[in-house]
Length: 88
Image (cartoon, rainbow, N blue to C red; front, side):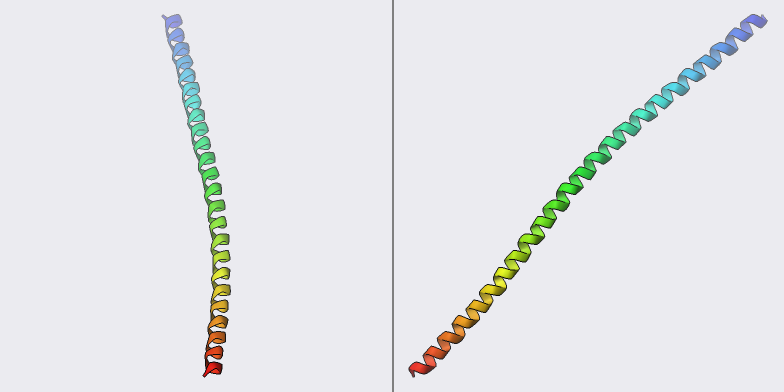
């Protein structure tokens, strides 16, 4: 009888240990999945950040071009106005 109780206790402890190992394994797998997901999100954010940086540079170039064209247009208008006054 005592032998059977001891055997049951040992079996119970063995099962508890197996369950603990199984839980640890599942948790490790979940952590790996989360880590991969976070890495993928980080890469996507880096790509998006680079896209935004390039768009900002392009907008700055276009703004500089617009300012330059506005300056040229103003000069042409002034020049044409001056020429028209001289013709009168």
